[in-house]
Length: 339
Ligand code: F0G
Image (cartoon, rainbow, N blue to C red):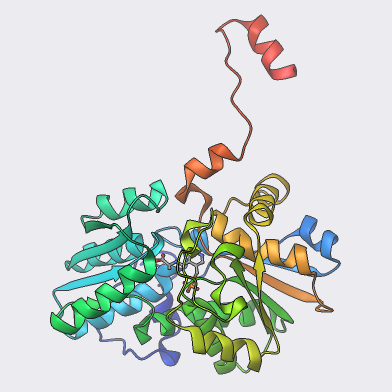
């Protein structure tokens, strides 16, 4: 085939699959690692951003989903299901379509970004808008999959973590040594996966996880009944991988900290305007945290930008300037262009 082969083939010796397994791939992984000049200068460290929005459905979820869906096919499942704040739904829907499986996704009604909803619907998943939040949705799909033979593809599924750990492999391959990783935390699957990946690669950067202040149970130590944040992807009050995230934090000598919506939005606009990198609000939590708390003596830092900015056009339009209306003649265009 053309280009890179997808992460299962690339890392097959470190994943629970064989080359003759029915591998489902959209050529995910091998995402760009971009030096962030402006942020580096601001924090006095060598800072890189890992652009996970460059995955086929626009988020890091594809890394885990290719593995979870491959395993579902291998086990003979005919359908997959997940609870989601949007990206897992988009990814599950795409990989289910590719594998010829039925897909159902349960999302909090009115609380997922437009692009993600469009993706899930376009890929033909059954989209269920729950009158409740993500935590309630996850609880319900867990109960449902106990009763019915449908594969659960949330990050409680260990194959999801296997796929997602490969991002740490890529970082170690490209950078050699890395002192710290900054990462947004919601359901806490990804921070858990990165820590597994770094350990398997013989590397141990400090892991700094960032939660939105209105949805920061891992910071406060108590479940958040009604999580709220503009970063809808991480609007989660009771992370499934709670214990594992705390272990990753402790073992790596890192921390889990909170950033406000305002700080998230500042980093979101700054990444787009100063670095030319458009990510979704939840992703900007990693950079918001680095800007807020500093590099803590770390020399080389990577921030994970988990999802593409186009996922959430509504927030982008609300956070940016307005267009300039213009009559179709040269004078008007000159005035509009030159100010
Ligand atoms: N960033 C984005 C863009 C996400 O979509 C998510 C999670 C996270 C960060 C946090 O990762 O949950 O592994 O700690 N999104 C899930 C979803 C919950 O349903 O799409 P996590």
